[in-house]
Length: 250
Image 1: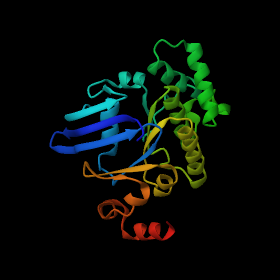
Image 2: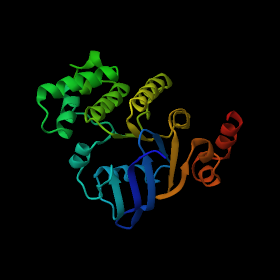
Image 3: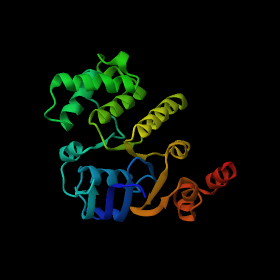
């Protein structure tokens, strides 16, 4: 069995009267690509926020690389090797693409010099195909470019585990294909990836395992071919037509 890099055990999160997560338990194995799927409001982003220190869990524990990180702050989780993109992309609009990425590198590695942060930023911008836009202000970039800038920022933090939150939302099919290619390359480089994604075509193309949340509860966790046939997942999220179509293609 592959080594577990992240363990979420009995995690619940309550916001006032809203139970956003209920007793969620997931083990993420090193080097795998996980799809985190489910209807809107299922608790997917809340789970990522809990793991990365944006919002603390109400109960339960989060362990990363053998270390209890249940109560760590965002900057601490970044320095440990947890990185993420955000669904709503909000770069520093007036800064250049290069300085946006360099800022992320400095945030996660405070001892890094500005010069080496910028070198790292150039590398990441080249990787995501934004080399030519490095001196442009982030405000001038298209949505697809801003999404790739967000990915470059996350990569500049040198992640061991990368959370991708709806990186394909709002993109056309050619842009989705480009983004999917980048995710394949990242996975091949050894970074463990957990992606929140609504496009099932992307999930099935990229992910080695799928985790499904519904109403804050874990309803499935397994291989893609098994999860898409799971009756609870079909009922809560995929719908009968999709499941039948997927089965006939599988």
